[in-house]
Length: 220
Image 1 (cartoon, rainbow, N blue to C red):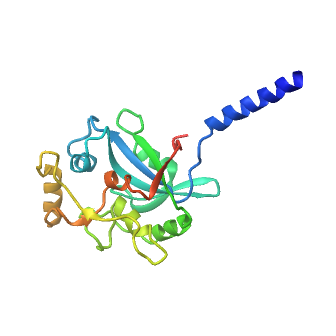
Image 2 (image 1 turned 30 degrees about the vertical axis):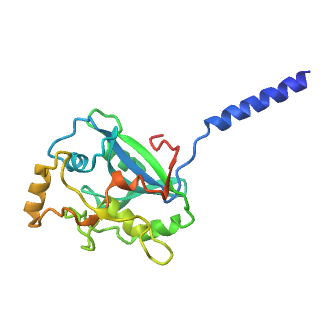
């Protein structure tokens, strides 16, 4: 009787551990950064402008995406930001850069390609762009990259075709007005706002059928 009880207890413990088991971050995973739609962002920041132009009425506004690389037990981030341009740096730096004003983290959502057999190749492709400046003009093929552009240009089929679709970019807010931030930014660069130019954004990219959510907490 004691033996039977022990066996039952063992399997109950094993089941509990299995149910609580989380997945681990893998090379090629995409880390999406989101803030609540009611978050009081700096109205003069790019994050605020992206939020106003890409918000779709959901509870979270996705403002950034980064590529993960896991090597030798250490996690690296490859992404394109205003601060770093296109760069590869440790996960801790990424977490620090995206810490909110009150010291908390935004929402970090990890998504993985449903077919991730080419994950190493995607990361190798992304490394080609390291050193490029951030693409403030949001234009294709101009020697610079913004966050989802880097992913779009790195996640390619064996034939070299982008796996993620482009769509006409929208810079207008929900009321159909152009945020002042975009007007000032593009006027400073001497470009018209590229409204309708093919491009990508984090809010749309995370909805791709190519991706599946992964239960990973990158802050631990």
